[in-house]
Amino acid sequence: MPKIKSNLLGPDGNHIEYDLNKFSRQAAKRTGTLKNWTPTKLWGDMSATAEREFIVERATDLVQSDPHAAGVVSNQAFTVVGDGLKPHPEIDWQFLGIEKAEARKLAAKQIHIYKRWAPYADSGRRMTAGMLQHLLWRSFLQNGEYLVLLQMIEDVNKPYMLSVQVLNPLRLKTPSDLSSRKDIKEGVEIGAYGEPIAYWIKKQGQVGTYAADSSANYMRIEARQGHRLNVIHWFESKDAEQVRGISPFASAMKTFRDMNDYLDAELVSNIVTAAFSLFIETGSVDPYFPASNMATLTETGYKSDGSSYEQRYQEFEPGQVLYGSAGEKPHAISATRPGTTFEPFIRNVKKMLSMESGIPYNVLFKDFDGMNFASFRSAMLEAWRVFSVQRIWLGQGYCQPVHKMLIEEAHLMGEYPAPNFYENIDEYTRCSWIGPPKGQIEPLKDIQADAFAVQNNLKTRSKAILERDGYSAISVFDDLEEEQEMLIERGLSEERIPNENIGA
Image 1 (cartoon, rainbow, N blue to C red):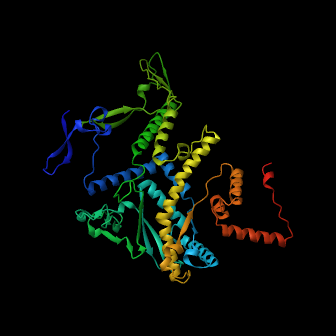
Image 2: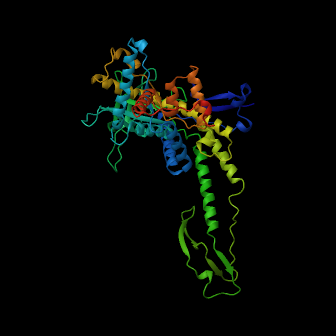
Image 3: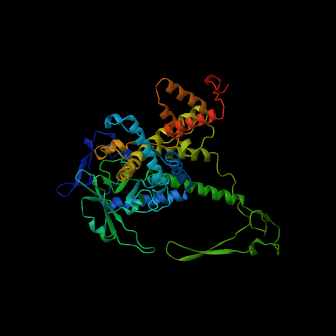
């Protein structure tokens, strides 16, 4: 076999040649159906930035104009975040060398501090802490990343200064006059080990004006000051040495767009078919209702050579009866669209799109038609596996760092008196982030399973309560205690239904 030249240049400046006889793997061959498969590589950070920005712009347009893409984002955001993930403190009192009662007091104090701060979390004073989480996860699902500035804003109306400012990730980019610097990649200034040192964020320009991409119009914000974060930039890393996120729609964007165009074409075709008027041909020219004398509209078109031409057409109202002259025969539009393969084809396309997200098609697009209980349950369990991982990502990537800074501020204000706080700051602020509970397919069986696990020491009551209702066990026990006291005060007896009689 002959040698072929690659796009890579060798030390001598010539193209490197490959001998096809030496290929040992089928995937590397340049023959047969693989002959024309030569992926294009991106050379330089500027080309990578331009392509990523173009993908983000298309993803934004897709989410704003395609109901399927908009539904995918909304469905996942509402399921993963809901009204917001809540902190569940996990203070290891034995490691810290404090009493268990003191650890419980500190845990309750953390929850109280978070509840006071949550309504004032947004620096723009529009969103609560839960709304910010919802916005961030939508940004990840659409743009592939989210970008947050952590501000300390003094305001007498706020209990704490810590504030969260959410930015559009497109503002993070490398200034044009600094493009030659090797330590700045797509707006992220990195260190020797690839860690973020600083972020270059474009300033907000005045309305109707465009600021140049020079460094004079950028802010250089250090990633952290000491142990405190200034910026939270999170994305799902899929490649080594990756510094920016890629929209999850990237691999399925063409399919989403093609399906949307196909549905539009089918919809327009059916509208035209439904609005087709009745045309009756007469034997002679009718001077009162000749079709040729009806109002004719014209529009100007342009050919490929630039010359113009006029195109004539007529608009008919649905249900009209038109009497045409002799020789005027319309060509009827077939009303057989969409065909019998339309619905199965669209379903297969949606299944293909669901593969990219890892969520079953039925759950992602909320199509449960024809499903039995077993398939529905398996689909929900598989989807919840993905949602659970995404909750962990949001909790570890955003919620926990912000919560740590919030508790530190409360400690400095004297509201969180933890001994040796800075030596064990991670232990004092560690939390699990719990979101809204998943839906119960069979509530009775789920309750019985939790009760059996608790009785056999396989699960704690706190865990069962969190998974089922999303509340802390302390608040539930307090409510039960208060309820029992109220029953005793009123002389009412509390009768419980034995487990074996439930549902009988």
